[in-house]
Image 1 (cartoon, rainbow, N blue to C red):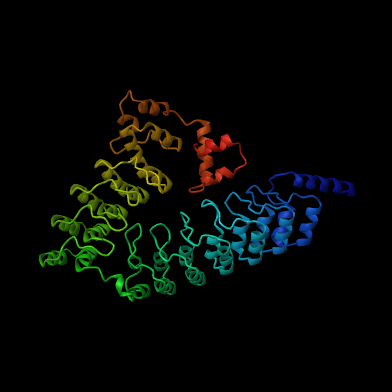
Image 2: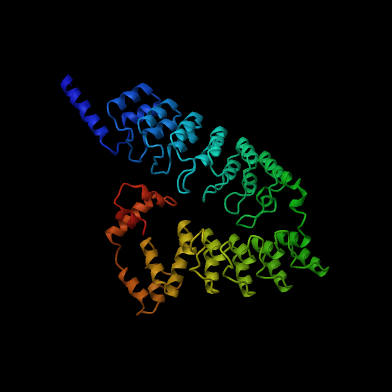
Length: 489
């Protein structure tokens, strides 16, 4: 190649690089930032290379510098106008990357240039990443910049919960010292549950020394003691704290173990079947959670309250749905258990749908459960089944939608890819379950043909993003109208 041709090639390359918002897989600026080559990076900037050039995944050179912990490169980029709060398609900011690498210098520089220390819940959280990787200093800097120490993310929980999950003992100590809530974790799951699940005696001892409530139950109705292996070091560590089981009666223990003869004997001796613990847990709650049908039947025959509610609003029916014990579900419904919750915190049909227990869902629907009930932090049971990819439950709920003639909801389901030709156990499609002249019947008939190309494209694009990632559609460089179509708005 001649010297003239070389110059032309260089000019063309630089021209492409300098185009604003150009998408390139990897530019020379990205490479220089990733490898910490400060001189090369400054040379490229003086030649006019766009400091905010991004890859197809919207990764900037600043992201690369922070991920590599190259403080000088990060500072040079920021001084030349790099976007300090740039977000990739995966929701990562430069500050998140700095916390990922544990670069205290990068974290400090970014905050100095105005980086947001606490982000919206749908973006990757810097403090959760720092804690996950055990970068205590990064965590402390973020907390000093007014990050909420108890920020709870839907699928990660609080920083303390993350620290316990990943057994980052130093982070656990520091968070507790700085005042983190010892019992706040991921919804009803506490940090103690996480520590017990990870078999971390040291973390269990730390949490209990800071006053962790050993009686707290998660969404499955289990205490930390219930998730550890019997006779393990973790069980011994928990049992050292006597109050964990002090309010449990022999009737509770018999129900937990499924010992019907012991239960009969205790009741004949005068023990009450409606005894409750400090958390208002009855023996019937325990029998249903573990699927001990004969014990549950005996308790109900002897006057156990079928709709008794714990401190966490769990009923025996909720517990039976949480463990998928259909026999217990049917028994409770026969004895008058309410299939509809009194509040948003413990809905039997939501619990069954999220866990894929389709027969429990079917039983609840037969007994009048409100399939359209919306739980504020979960949505409808159908939405939850779709989110968890519990196809059988989604089909059953879709069939129920047809029965109650909810046209708007059926329309939405089919937009999300529900098959209107799916048949139930009786060989009937949703259209066969509604009045032939109803608006819903007309809707099903309109959808009998193959989906439109637009609909197929939307389904394909959403599938590419994967579960829980659809909020990232808003970050695509697309017309607003198209983004709204992809998001079903």
